[in-house]
Image (cartoon, rainbow, N blue to C red; front, top):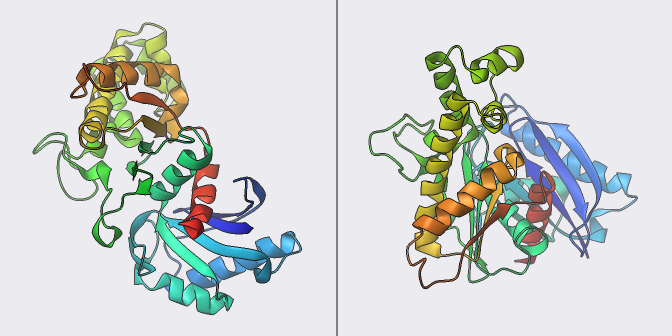
Length: 316
């Protein structure tokens, strides 16, 4: 049976037809915009779905269901998008309206996009076969996906699993959520860029400063310069890994997973990130002397994880 998975972001919505092996056999993308109202947004998702099926010479009768992942607060069982910071959606009965627009009576499910990503990685990706998985998707913020005992953990009315907003430092750096000291205020890609900028201002003659002047600020430049031995860059990377590691260890001490997956753009640093993170977890997790080692590794499905995971919502 084939399913459609739709990964919705602040700039685009990517739909994929996913087969029973977790393979995306066809894709289609449309732009999204915060200025789009609810009625138009739902109409766009209806057209995206129908157009994808048309591309494949299929109809709605040929699929088993549709799953959608959103970057925001989602009431999974109720089918309601409570809030999406990058889209003009607030307390929208999405499943009801989407179903009506499609005239589709089979399964339609929605969830947070980080939940979709961990479902995909646990079924087909970097944590294939594992029953206890933590996934941290590092981008503008930090998305967290939790699977414990083979079950997706989302909390009451699916309002939990917001790991980016656990506190790393009381009264610390301001977070986009309005609080201070959140995990993502220290360990997101945005935070890494801010830390790099501060290091450049403090060390204007460093290789890091030279690289930023030539290529601009991003989440990669500090790692690149650290590998070349630049002291300012090494300090940025070491501190960033400690921030990220502390947040991960906090979750490991609660859930004690078999595997921790790192996704998002920062994960592209590969061993420069993963090896020291593995060492940090090995050293700092509670019970390390007598419990199995927790593996830290990079997520492998990349941008396809959201589509594949959204399709898997239909099978839960």
